[in-house]
Length: 237
Ligand code: BTN
Image (cartoon, rainbow, N blue to C red; front, side, top):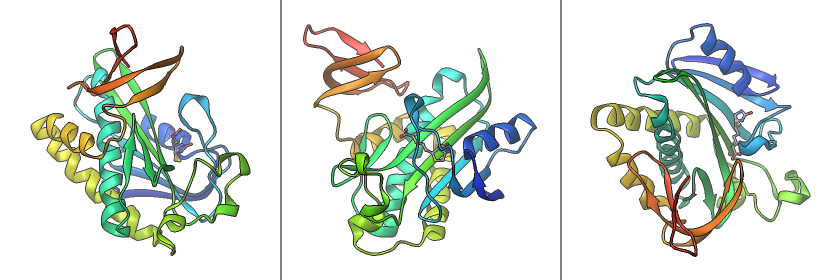
């Protein structure tokens, strides 16, 4: 993976560029990396703050031979790969908060956004967008997210080499992706659960239609969260 790299100084969003490249037939493993995004996108139609030169803003194109319903597997796989890479490169100990936020000391430093080009039974491409706050100082975060966001450098107390981290992330994704295609989701699920802080806890999950509160029981083999509400009903989200 990452053998075909498109590096850009400034883009609206690496997702948009990767989508276009995927549509035009770009090979699996094509990576779009940018120094700065002026319209970085987050989940649930939120913005993703992506200032110049401080973070890793990138989108990876995969073309997995799996049905679209299984696409969540790849998001969870990516979260595990990034958590492992952060741990190896920085020594920090990351947690994963459902579905795929990576937190250090309770604050978010990584977000993942997965977008699909698919037919009902076949995936054309999956674009995995990764936003990693690497070298921002506290002052470089907008005030309204300072209480909930952090960077690896803030938590580690020193700057981190972005190139080294990108390399390690791609290496880990590649290893886990191979393992996934050979052995299925189970091994990834076990790794994911090892990092997850939400399981066994009362959480509020956001869905496109609102919020749901309940106890996170775990994830299914499909990569879907099981949530038990106060009435004992189980929701799959
Ligand atoms: C989230 O809301 O937690 C997901 C954030 C994903 C941000 C990354 S940065 C690279 C890629 N390009 C985007 O516009 N978004 C993703």
